[in-house]
Image (cartoon, rainbow, N blue to C red):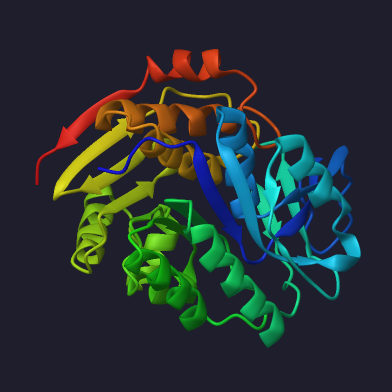
Length: 316
């Protein structure tokens, strides 16, 4: 069992500035009026870092950042008290647009990231080797920028795993498919990403369970499937545990999956018992959908929701 720790590295290879707009209805093909908007530093690993920092973790952030528009990231890392090990590359970090409609529907328009060259890759690998010396937990989250192949990303996960590190990997499409071959310690696909991976639409919980079990044959210790309002499924040691949150007033689902990853990571770092860990991470994620922006405004509120989580062992 890994010793309790507060130290964690979150890796965001393809961060983004999120431009989020709230509007009544998105009129595709014509003009839509945004009621309010915000621009903030994001990317899946950056979101995970923010939540972990709020929970009390000692966070180091790494990945690749465009040097032309890094100010909002630098400000956020300073506010979080995070150690900044991002490699700066020429150009601007991408801006992703998220349009949130009144009915809760979110339309994501994701742009390609910066171009990462060989020199930056070598610099990142040296940083990774350095951080391996005194960290046990590494979170790889998000998509890949141009210049980084799925095989390259998988090789970094493998490097960490071979050193006995606990890698939590949250990605999709080809990056997820290739990354699984490196046997990350924990993965967290949602039902849609799981469908993409197995190549067919998964409609029922039973189909999701079967798909996850087919992945566990690859030797991945923890498979966590997030299913939105239907809760969270966790497969470990051939045992399924399900957590169902109470009905929440959904304001925005942006960052809910990243919040779940942060909760799972923190629970393991703090050596929580299994049921407590899943109910805590699920409560954290449930709270996330009731707010705009990523973070933990109140740990008391998380604990209150945690009391209402329904936990169930699923027999197969």
